[in-house]
Length: 496
Image 1: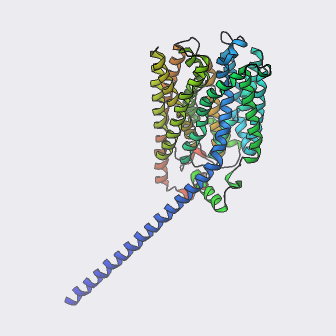
Image 2 (image 1 turned 90 degrees about the vertical axis):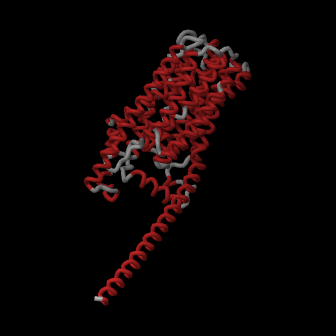
């Protein structure tokens, strides 16, 4: 019996020792795995920084030129265009509005062409086209001529913004998109600020070559676009698979990241994926959010010079005073984009930005003092501009598969840009612009409401997909089964 007790004691000791050894081995494996994951994440960040350096400055300049060319009509107006071309009544509003009709209609076909052709061919080609239109706008001497020029400008410029948004989604994971889109979109706010400074300087060329100062604004900004477009043929990279600045190891790392992010969803072209995007009601929910944001954004870009001018400042000073609202918008756009990616959240940041802009417009509609109204204008721009790239990152990350994402983004941007027509006709009665400010307050409230609905809907779908995966034992090993389902794949997760 004593022997039996000793044997049992010996066995227990061995068992404890064995368990301890196993625990140590598991702990070491976990440490090794964690160290391996950390090393992988460090390598990924290095590659992301390399991509940022080679891609983001380039596409940001493209969009800066694009926004400068479409919004300089506002600077030209107060530089004398309205007087010289007798743009009384609603004529300026019509000139501003006609741009958005072809701009909205051409965006989906343009993104399909981007997928069929190389980005390094398609993007520079449409840039050359709109740069030539912009340059030749300096020859317009009638109201009818300006309308025709703005129609062609909208048609040729349509592919740039949705194209670059889609292009970036082919390089970056969903969780990395908002920060990069914020950097890209911040070019619009820089264009707003830079456009005022540039217009202030170019105005002084009045009479040179027989052209008015406002004609020189169109001419010089158009020539700059054409020059940069020609350079773009040589410097734009198509895809990670063919990028010359990536080493073989870097390229594999990027391709693996993107494959992991896609959950095995399709990347090839097929009309099936086009119809998936068109028939998805959630695409139209994102369109509603984006349109509610773009009405304020375009109103700011088209009418901020006029609003500041009506506060009692001279035309020259009004050009300069448009800089701070856009500069504040640029800073907040970058900060919100970084935070949105860090927390992998979209909706709450859009609500926050809309709320800040709402405060600005309430100040504008309720105050008559120039100083208070000017602060309201700054808050309005600083709040709404950051919402645009976050919303686009949201729309892109919630469309499964490359082709479906490209079409969904083009639909959101294209149909949302129809809001620019509304923006063109709401600022009619200076100096208080009650109608314009009131409409935009309504748009911001609408955006907040739709964002809340979208967050609830996406969360509901995520819970349903998680429950299905748990019930049916579905994991990444079965991704090939659901490759062509897009958002309907049980492995797909919506970003909130």
